Length: 162
Image 1: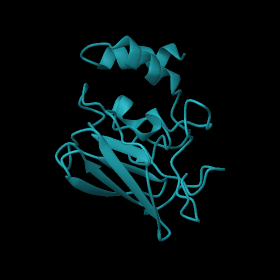
Image 2 (image 1 turned 90 degrees about the vertical axis):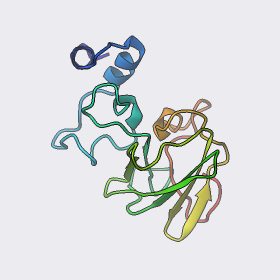
Image 3 (image 1 turned 120 degrees about the horizontal axis):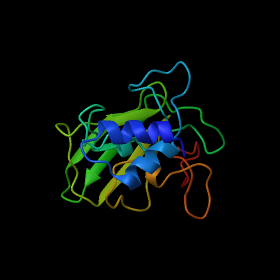
């Protein structure tokens, strides 16, 4: 655990949540040369920091990263992400140059559970399970794939299930 990061999280938050603080500290430092903003931390659980508890970083209701395939971290640029909540309200998002997308509260506040479909290179894949309560894709989609995680989000070129 990086205590410097944990201390920063606790010092800047109105209330220090030790569970969230430890999870944020475990993410490690920012990548060298990548400033905080829409291009940072691809593949990490965005809403962990962007939860609205501090104000800066801004709150996200849903956020994540889409990659081209299961075997590497090539970003799926301009992938379409369709979010549909349990009330049938849908919101389209688009990934940026590192594969990240994010949704602000004034744009869409889903009522869970939520369905997700991703389109990239004319292939659409729908998630087989519903998102239960957390808007961070990487809370479940961690690398590497293992019994506790399906691995990062990607769209198989053949349209099969990722």
